[in-house]
Image 1 (cartoon, rainbow, N blue to C red):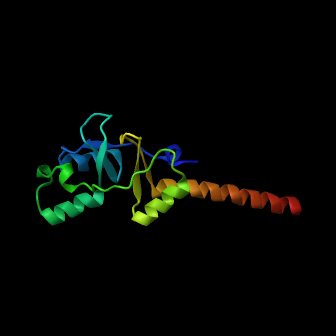
Image 2 (image 1 turned 135 degrees about the horizontal axis):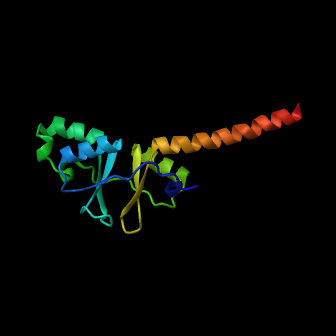
Image 3 (image 1 turned 180 degrees about the vertical axis):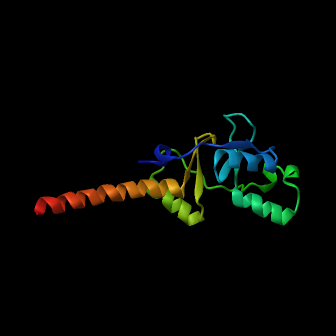
Length: 145
């Protein structure tokens, strides 16, 4: 199993030129806590950053500007941990833990976003694996009785 197979939810992207108020509305409308920031608005544009709900709050507190006057480029995180679709779940967990992040965009070889993986996605997948193992143990116990 790899991260490309479990990336959950909708992939929401915004142009680096979008206003933060628009980004916040998109996040609310799509029920996501992070959006990928791309160079331009088209679907084949490479990723240049990531904005989380926390980034928006911090930008508002730090810059005390109207969110209509702040661009995505001004508040985005630039050095984002990215994963490749073929990266293993164990590798993703190790990288995310090392960087202390809860979300990681999945990008193609050309840097174009193709998905997002979150700790929620990883927990769900690992829970499924644990339940499968528990089922094996339970059946073995039943057979021995």
